[in-house]
Amino acid sequence: MHIALPDNINKYLRKYSSDKWEIHCNKNKFKSIIVIPAIDEYDNIKILLSSLLKNRSEYFSSTLILFVVNHTINSSSDVKCRNLNTILYLNGIIENNNFTDDLSKEIINSGLQIGLVDASSKGFELDEKDGGVGLARKIGMDEALKHFDYNSSNQNILICLDADCTVSENYISTIRKTFDQQNLHAAYVNFSHGKTNNIENNLAIINYEIFLRYYVLGLKYTGSHYAYHSIGSTMVCDVDSYIKIQGMNKRKAAEDFYFMEKLSKITDIKKISEATVFPSSRGSWRVPFGTGKRVTRFLQKAQNEYLLYAPESFTILKNWIELFNSEEVLSGEDYLTKASEINKSLFDFLTTSKFKESWNNIIKSSKSENQIIKQRQLWFDGFRTLKLVHYLRDSEFPLINMFDALDQMFEMMNIPFNYKNETGEIPSIKIQEEYLQTLREIA
Image: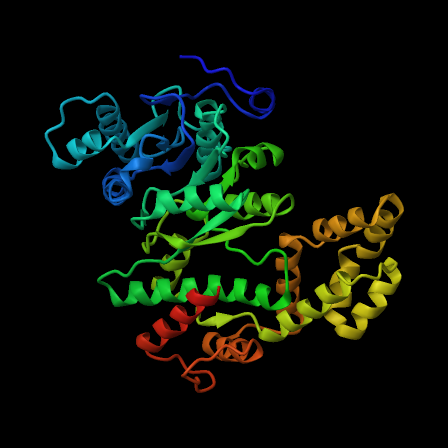
């Protein structure tokens, strides 16, 4: 059945979307759509569905669990075969094909709404140039726009998840209630990587999650507008915000970073603390960096992974943000002069980034104080923030022992912690878990 879509949705779809793919599902109108790219995930999808089934069933009829089963034209025959099995399995649930296995029967009887985008069958595969997680998310999110209930007063929300995750029992209800009650436009869900039966794998994922949370903690210390996590399986936004930023990008990796950064330029990104996504702790070939790649690299012992950005970098960043965001509007030259007093490497970074010319042009073209405030945020965005931290790392403040960095940052932020690391040491896994638990509570 064709649904009449609002003008802004039609305009977006005409300009930015493809009509090559479509959703196969039983209903047409939803309030929440969870978009899940899946490549070679037949077994993991069943585990994910089992965890979603434990959510509150009164939300099932208004929530679509949308799988985008995808691969590229040149994917291996094994991947293509397993994707075909996934499509057959999901289609069977959607069409209620008298399954005999307990999980399928439970899904059908529960009222959990399953949707499928086939980006795997011949003629629907992703091309090699763009094929990857960004395009798979985009296909799902764009198609989801055609299946929302636009007559309801509550927001329609797009929720991103990954096929190898599980979720807490309050996942769907908490996201829905938080958006409705707090009128959010963009958010990320709390996350916690699960343990495995392999100690080395556990060490790898503790290491990686500490790395992620330390960076966000450092940004919180600086007062940065970009102190949030950019993890694809935790992202949530309302439809209006999705349209405003021209949708998801097609990047094969870091699609989540750039998507969240674009959202952060039009609205505040909030944390949904009460629900949790449990991302996989496995190594993976699927993306060139991120969790899977980092875990694989740790296990291969290719380099020292027990390193973090020096806390001094965040102190310099904090001083720069305070200067740049102060009430007084300075010329590009004056900002550079004051930046040189903070730190020479900061001055060099701003000079290399052509800050003076850009800022003077911004002042000339801005017609109000609010415009200047907004332009500050746009110029010194999340990507440039990360570039400055990397520049300081490469020029003056090299990476230091992970736990020394944590001790220093906890002290700088007055965060109590009952262990003090011996300089340069790697503590036991039990102590590492304590560091991570503290970080989970604050970042």
